[in-house]
Image (tube, rainbow, N blue to C red; front, side, top):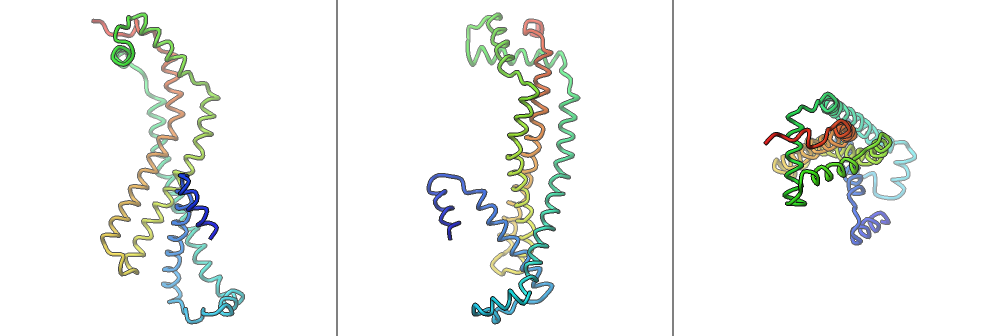
Length: 245
């Protein structure tokens, strides 16, 4: 009861309750899957044996409780290992490909000219319509100083991203649970029709895909920042790269 009181208090105070709800939904889905596996392997549960406190005590101390608990533990471990393997298998190749592309990217003279033109237009139309070439060059120098990134800064950024990446991975695990649960529910629950099956399946797929690409973006961001630093450090003045009129 204390959990629900804390949940409602946080919600009324404007605090996020998504992590708690995610864990609660994950637990319910795991119990649902484990229950269906138990019924499939061991037959239906005889609820007539569990009416009084004495029945629950006997059910516990006799060791019968470890049968459904074993199914729950088995369900948790199998789904966790499967979703964990699937998540890292998918993200590894995407991240590897993106990082390789960023590292091997070489700035051409055409890229420099386009960048110079875009920067000049951004200054003229966004900050100072009457800016001269010297003023634009001064803006460019200031921007270079502002976005200077050191190696230790990248390490701090990577450390800050650890918690975010863990949350994204938990979202992927929830997506896998939703997808697996759909196939159990559509065959065992009469009210869980094909419309609910398709909607929940689509939601699980969208959540999983979004989690994968969000993780990839965050994972390659430090590499992208280092590449930007390298490009800026090796860049020439705007006067040397701007296109000829």
